[in-house]
Length: 406
Image (cartoon, rainbow, N blue to C red; front, side):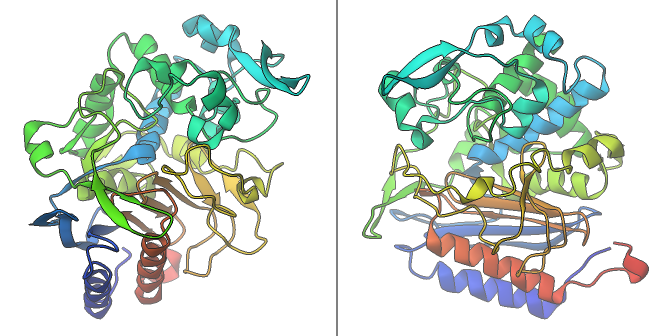
């Protein structure tokens, strides 16, 4: 089983202590690293709960997961495929369950004006899970802000489903509200709220607690504060942008959790679908999730575009800079196809939340991790450097079983 030595653990602790020593840079931070067996190789918190909240950050602190929620939705979707309730490429079944997707429009420029026109292509579950269906977020797409000013995808309401497509299904990659439609699909397939489906089929078998779409009172008392950094680098504490009492159960951004509980999902993926002694996915389903769904677009994450809402996200030149290596996308997450400078093995999965929370799963080397902060906008340089440094330290010290077995 993968492991790291104690000197590495101590060095990671000291590194996090240093980065959180000035709360005006990173007020608080939690790091968890796990192996295939579910053993926590790193489980450490430092700093304080908020810039204006001196209570210490702890490993029991609760964070908004934001888009780290998408992995939960993808696992749940693959379970429905295993049950035979829908196929990844079955457009007929998807439209039968969600007839609204038949008539969703696409925005195109007509006489230099963004205009809603009928789409030509049909949407499939695979497209929703691989972000090739055509949905986007308004904070990435100014047209959506202009045409649908009432939509705030982080408000926790059903208006998240009101926006149209920004390209024809299957013709491009675009990050957006697809996973919220996956939630609608599962709710209708199963006849119950997605939170109940996930609790029964994922969280209970894996022994996961302290993870909710509507945080319990105990979780709220341990909820880390959210922060906003202005263009000059000045940090202020702010109210949470996502509702703690959300009307809509969002697979796109709706979960709050304690970090060590979320890593049980990552360990399950490392262990080919088994966690806590229970199988929640077949190995085939896990393998399928790690297949690059968009090999035709190896540079999809290198298209720097000005954000529609700069308070939510910085303009990043590319996602996870790695030279000219081809980029991939699996079932709900990015794939680094080739080994990386930090030490990742090939075909490692990773993704993030808009509040600068990052996870990765390396099935080749048997290690996964989650690094959590609560800072807007996305792409905070200090947090990203800290995350990458922790990752590199883990790999430098990583010990694996003989003969390549993890």
